[in-house]
Length: 489
Image 1 (tube, one colour):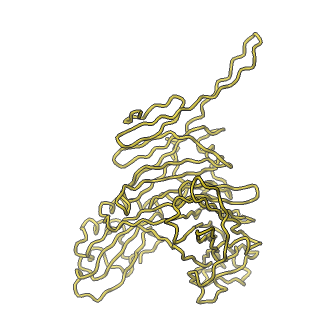
Image 2 (cartoon, helix red, strand yellow; image 1 turned 90 degrees about the horizontal axis):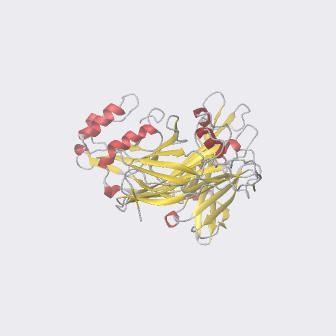
Image 3 (cartoon, rainbow, N blue to C red; image 1 turned 90 degrees about the vertical axis):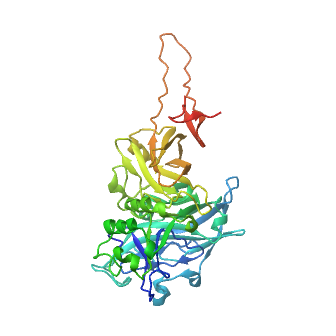
C-alpha cells in the first residue's frame, strides 16, 4: 500500500484473484476521490494517537463547545427558519470503537485539553431532515504512540488541530436551493475555529459574533467526478509510464505489482486522486482525456474544514494565530487546499480548481468559487487602510483563454466576500485582485466665504460584455469591455 504521508495518492483496492486469464474480468480503474455519507454519521473516534471529538448540541453539552442552532432557508425568497434537534443513537451511526464499548465512542472533556466527544445531531423542520456532524480533530501523546487513549494518564497531552463541519442527508439532492446556517457556541475552544476554512459550499458566509458564536452559512453544491477504466491488457502504455516515472517505488508500493506487469496481471487495480495537495493536479491533467462520460458521477456536498489551521499563520505575516482568517469554498472536485497562494508581484490571490468538463447529465459543468477574508487580512495583503468598492476576478484556462470581471465588493461583520459563478471547467486558475480605492476629491478653499461643499462620490455603472456565448458584467465609474469582448445591447 502506498504510504499517504509520502504520496498524495490512494490505492482503492488491491487483492489477488484466482483467474487463469487476466482478460476475463480484471480491470484498471482510475478515479477522482469523492465520498458522501448520506444519512450515515460517525461517533466520536480515535486511532493510536489522534482523535475526532464530535460536537454535540447545547441541549446536551453545557461545559464545552456545542451546536446551539441550525437554520434552513428553503429558497432565497424565504425567511430563515429554526430547525429542531434530536440526538442520534448508536445504532444509527458508524462506530469504529464500539467493539471496545460505548465509552470509547463518547467521552467528557477534562483539564488536559481533551474536548467533549459526543454524538452527531439530527435536525428537522417540516419534512426536511438533515444530519449535522461537526468534529474537533486533534492528537494526543504520552511520550510515545498509544494503542488507544489513556484517559486516566496525567501525562497525556491533547492538542487541537481544527475541525470539520458537514451536513448530510438522503434528501440533500432536493435541497440544492436551500441555505443552511449552523451556529456554534465556541466557549473556550477558539483554537478549533481559528485559521482558514476550505470546502464545498456556494453563497458561503462566516461570522464571529460578540456573543462568542461561530456561524457558517451556505448552500450544498454538486461535485462532479470522473473515472477512467480499462481491461488490464488494454491499459495504454503512457498510463504505465506515468506511474513508473511519477509514483512507483518498490519501497512504498509494498504488495502492489509493478506497473509494467499490469497488462498481464490477474489483480484488479484502482487508483484515486483527490484534492489533498497541489501535486494531485498533474494526475487530473493527465487522466482527464481518458474519463468515460458514462462513469461520470455527481455528488451533493455540504462540507468545510480548517485542518492545517495551526500552520496558516506561518504562511504569511497577514495571519494572526488564534484568529479566524477566512474561508474558500467551491463546487470543484479538486481545489487548492487552505488559503490561496499570494503572488506578491502581481498582487493577486491565486487558487486552482479542477473538475470534469461535463457532468453526469452530459452538460457543461459550471463552476462556483467563493472567497471570504477577514477585513484585517485583506487590508494587510493589499496594503490598504480602507477597502475599495470593487475587485478584479480573472478566470484563466490552459488554452490561454480568460474571463475577466470587475465585481462589487461586499463586506459584513468584519469579513469581505468575493464570488465567481458560471465559469466552465476543466482546470481553470482563479486570480483575485483588489482595485485601489478611488480617491474622492476635496473642494479647494477660496478666499471668499462659500457654503460648505458637498462631497459627491463617483457613481459606478455596470455594463454587459459579450464574447460569443459568454457574457460578463463589468463594474466601474467609466466601465469598458476587456479585450476580446464587445458591449452587449
